[in-house]
Length: 117
Length: 114
Image (cartoon, rainbow over all chains, first blue to last red; front, side, top):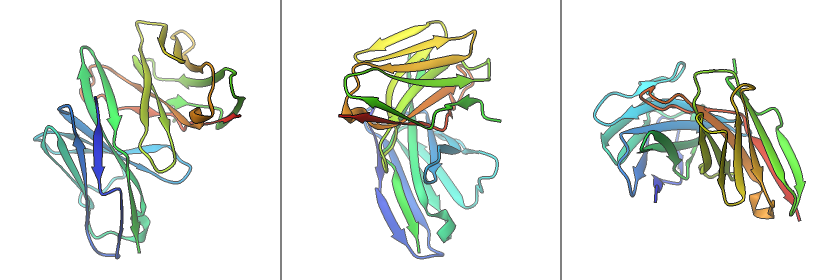
């Protein structure tokens, strides 16, 4: 149990285009999903927290108009990188919170490698 | 200010021996701790967690120890296997904060030598 999928697993796009990444919790409902970005040889950087049916909460320094997050259902959150530029090239990972009793554990998707030419 | 620290960027261990990965935290509000394992170009995989009401949690070859007074936790892997070679992230959260955001350490790269 606790499987999270991401699609696509990798994408190459031209500068100026928009890219949508989907994150799905396959076998549980996730009220909260998170989007992370990982740079080479660095830790995960939280970009935003997404709650179903409400606006995402963005971390300081993350442009909300550039990284659009939609959490339309308890099993799906999407991240759209708008007008992508080469500096947006990175590894994007989502996670979904699964609450069991009093404890909450985040389960991660496999990640999406974005390359902007 | 880094609230979760993994001071060893890398660790090499012989196959069959014990691997000990350490993690320190500074925020006394953290009360739930997790360890994740990550291979390159993949998302982290949840390994084991511990609540602050416990000082030890065991799951197969993995044991996590928590020393609240020292704000220190460690992950023990016994016996270590080559397949355990990966980057291990320590993460912490505050229960009841609503979003259960995780604060990650920078990771420790474990290499298990056959």
